[in-house]
Image (cartoon, rainbow, N blue to C red; front, side, top):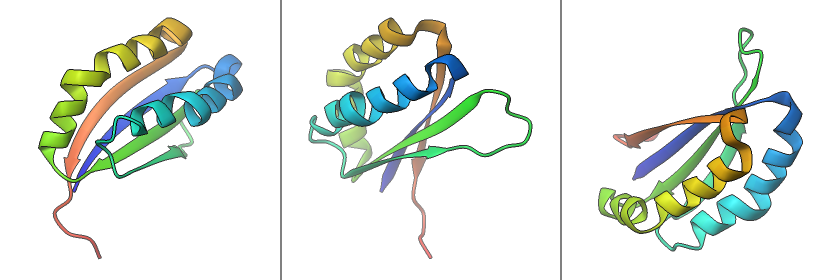
Amino acid sequence: MITYNITVSVEESIKSDWLNWMTTVHIPQVMSCGLFTKAKISKILTEVDSNYTFAVAYSCLTIKNLHQYQVNFAQELQKEHKDRYGDKAVAFRTIMETIAEF
């Protein structure tokens, strides 16, 4: 299993709009690509983070599925996010392969 994790730090002023847009528009668009098996959004809890930081994790069966997403869909969907929120939502991406689950 491959997890494509996007960590996003958003400004407080856009938090509610961002969460709503992510859950009603963006994540459903990503899932409609047909390459991921599930998605979840989590709030990162830290004492030192003054902003609001979230992790959006998409799961897919193979690295090939993720590559297809990156080649065929990611650029346009990331542009929509950037156009809507600009520098008020800063993201970085991590790819993880599941070794074992307990």
